[in-house]
Amino acid sequence: MKKIQISPSILGVKKDCLSLVCNQLIKAQSDLIHFDVMDGVFVNNKSFVDDEISLVSSLVSHKIIDVHLMCKDLKYYIPQYANEKVKYISIHYEAVDNLSLIYYSDIIRSLNIHPGIVINPETDVIEIIPLLNCFDLVLVMSVHPGLGGQVFIESSLDKIKFLYDYRKNNNLKFVIEVDGGINAETSKKCIESGTDILVSGSYIIKSDDYKKQIESLKQYERDLY
Ligand code: DX5
Ligand code: ZN
Image (cartoon, rainbow, N blue to C red; front, side, top):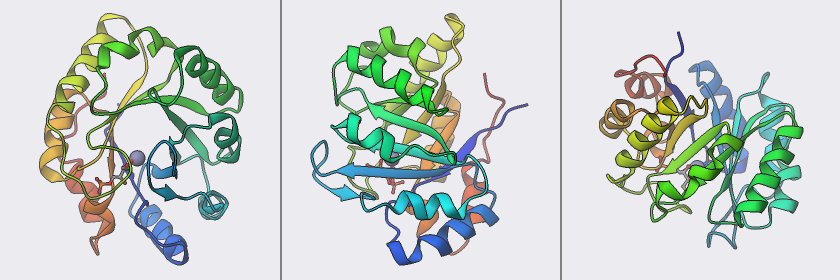
């Protein structure tokens, strides 16, 4: 039986606190660690471009890192973030054309990492249908990328439901992840709509009890598929 997974986002964590926070997340039985890379081009902000990936990778014992590339220059960024502790590398549908997305999904897979595709709030989920068989994960952005601590966009739930039904009806195997504004209330709606992985930044990291927060996000969990 598979369960809902939680991927805490460490976006807001300063470099000198990364090792403490990651160790605590592992202790709190975090399923994944969500690692937000911002290039200052695809989004205005910059994050984790100074080799923090090596530090975080050295702190974890298994394939647990969930890399979210908010980046335009995928040729440069994908190899920088590929290592044996990285389980997923997700790239934005809006960053490059469809042929390049397929090309990069193959590159990521050849590095023994699961490729994921991300859609922004203004992107219609219908647009990624032709790409779904190339990716192992679909990440639905429920806030505009570039910043933690924003409010959940409710229309994301329709995208999650659509993906859940489409996967079932077409015998596909990708997992559905949602990112932005996830707390105890929005997690319930996302789980009911068909999400498999919940990314959550401020709700977990700003608390002094990671385990309690992670458990509260899982309280409505159901079997996957
Ligand atoms: C936003 C990032 C998110 C963010 C989530 O661009 O992709 O992963 O850190 O943070 P919260 O949970 O605070 O919305
Ligand atoms: Zn993210």
